Image (cartoon, rainbow, N blue to C red):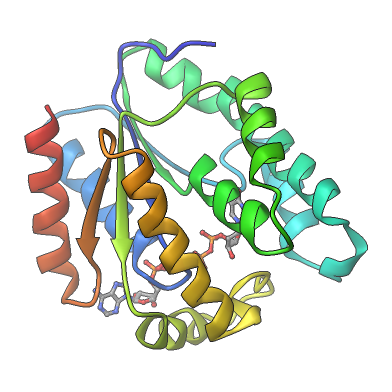
Length: 208
Ligand code: ADP
Ligand code: TYD
């Protein structure tokens, strides 16, 4: 599968770092500039993938092995790609995605043993697409976790694991940014939303 002509932007970072907020602000800004924007998220972003989201983020997480969980997240991504992302890119829309494959590299690749090789193999075989630009909202988990916790929802899969896991994820995301320097930009999330949004826009302008 190959990307179309539109620009594909992903937001990554630990729970509560402000990804959803920044993805929304960027979408609003680009729409205001007259662009067609598809704002979407993972897991989810298509009807089938939203069904899988409920399987992986609600209920007893221990009912899935680490490998089964990886397959479920990848199945959700494949459906999202087929039904939402590829058609949007093909018609020239900008796609802004709240989390994408880098989240799988981190959460399924690192949190329950080292499954990174399996994550990468499955990604290459079944997804094969990377964003043009990945904005990593970097943040101290001690500051981000209360933000994430303040949102009372039924979906608490990884933020439930607390600070040590979030510290590991933060370090892992920074290492991923070093691994893929061409598409990653790191932005300090521990500031007012407008200040973060200004840096997001600057990163996009530098890219295009
Ligand atoms: P994420 O998608 O990374 O989990 P959200 O964008 O949903 O993060 O933000 C988590 C919570 O923190 C929300 O209640 C949101 O309103 C708030 N928030 C987001 N960005 C900031 C910021 N820069 N400063 C303070 N609070 C923020
Ligand atoms: P999300 O709704 O983005 O949560 P938050 O707004 O708190 O960041 O994502 C839900 C959870 O799903 C989050 O804890 C990370 C996890 N996740 C994975 O484990 N693997 C994945 O591939 C993706 C996309 C998300």
